Amino acid sequence: GRPLSWITHAGAYHVAYLLKIVMGGAPLPNDVAGFLGAMRHYLGQQVFDVATMAAGCPGMPVGLDLIAANLRIHPPWGSPRLAGAAGVRALLAFSILKQG
Image (cartoon, rainbow, N blue to C red; front, side):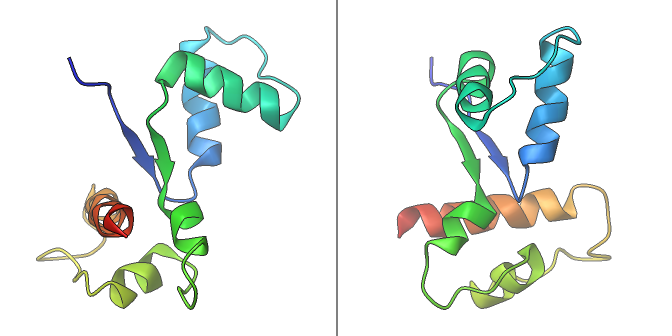
């Protein structure tokens, strides 16, 4: 089947927390190369960070709300603070940024 994809916004902390759980509480690697290697081993090659992707775009603001506004992604209906609202905006931003 298709490989699983992971999409975050400024998610290194969240990925580290997930790795800690998946690795059964074992210590995380001490350096970036080791962390990236463990991430790829446990989560696969398809791990994307919207903040990092946006940083490569000239003139793109910082922060998910500003990135989404710049990409004309509107807040979800109802409250933008609903559970999952930021995840939906990160996914939509990822889709637009990946297209180029």
